[in-house]
Image (cartoon, rainbow, N blue to C red):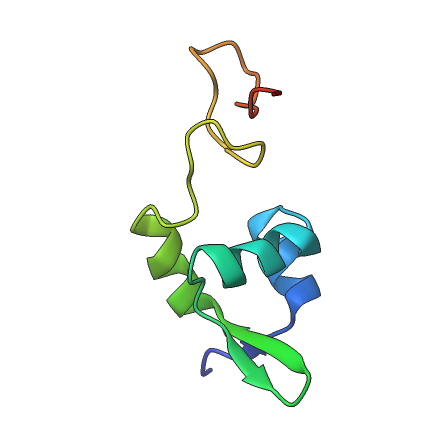
Length: 80
């Protein structure tokens, strides 16, 4: 079966992040997305390659998915 188009909601669930994170990645990190009318659509294989290339990660980001020094906590952005 061919890779089907996914919605913002489906992509957020697929990656385990919020819809706001998806929108932020589209504008700030060149997440592979296609605008169809007013809607954003995604191909999972394109997004998987983008994630594997490290484009979704940002050390110090509140959305970082890696553990901090093995404590099991997520990295968070320092408050100013």
